[in-house]
Amino acid sequence: MRAGVVVAARPGVEDLAVRAEELGLHSFWVTDTPMVHGDPFVALALCAKVTSRIRLGIGVTSPALRSAPAAANGLVSLNALAPGRIICGVGTGNTARRTLGMRPTTAARLENFTAALQDLCAGRSTEYREGDRVRDIRFLHSGAHVNTADPIEFVVAALLGPKAAAVAGRRGTGLISVGLLDPTAWHALHDTRRHAAQDTPHDPDSYVVTSLHILDQDEDPHGDAARDATGHLVLSLLAFAADTAANTPAFADQLGPEEREAVRRLLDRRGTTATAPDRHIKLYPNYLGRIAPQDRDLVLPSLMNTLALIGTRDDVLARITTLEQAGIDELLIQPVLDPPTEMAQLAKLLT
Figure 1 (cartoon, rainbow, N blue to C red):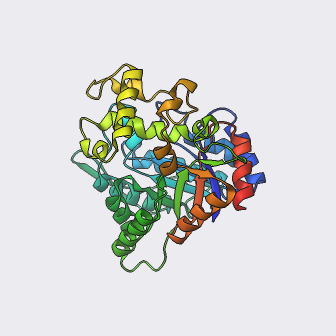
Figure 2: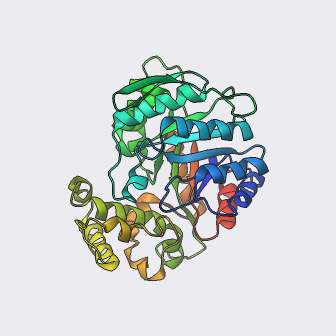
Figure 3: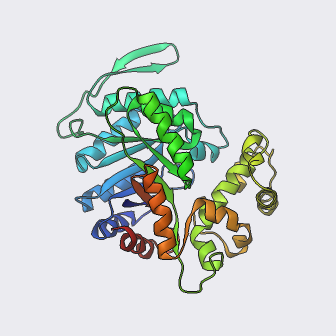
């Protein structure tokens, strides 16, 4: 299985991209969450100028964040800096929208957005709509300005489950998901994508984002070190559950009693409620960042084991093998403690 990394945009991100390339990692992704992290297009432009091989990904953008012309312009501009190395993840904007206190967009809008990006980034015209006004648009600048000749890879975020997989199938794209380490779930997503693809002759790549913690001899798999390495993913899920408890109770209902109690404690600790209109301001600061020591008790072993790869080297490799058998092509880690060290650990494990 290939290996890659996902980071937040910040000054110095290009140094991490250089190190990832030196380690032999396949891809380097930057998140698109405007109210929490820096801008991925700016970050990846810096990365493009200092790397020559590693693929560069947006993980992920959304029609709820950017118009198709603006997003496509950013992508083909990056493609001019790093020809044929650009990957664009697209999604409903779940996290990025919720950090604004808004809901994600629909699968239908996601599909239209993806189609428009694919057309524009390949140099074709596409339909652009604002209200009742509809026009055909295409890039009017080319050559040294942008690159529409080299292909850009597209992947759809699988948060919507079968709906997203069907969009990926119809648009001929791959899939990406965060913390989805259940091989059965991936088999179902791939079956849905293939069914929707109909005559598409190949299976595009699938990516899973997680965190990795290889245990030292006799180390507690749920000790402070493991919680610190994986807690950002656990708290992101708890924040989502807390944010959506009132409007989307079906998700919270899937959690066990211990997880629901952790959601309640998180709301209390952040000084908000599941119905407060400003809860997004309290729940999402430092989203997917290193957790505070006082929040370690919220990092439940059940969620650590569900969302992250924790164990001995052999244990982790066994789980990775089952994911590979389920059709995962690339394992992406999201390091928060010491990214260079965590990237080196991943490279040693998989490359």
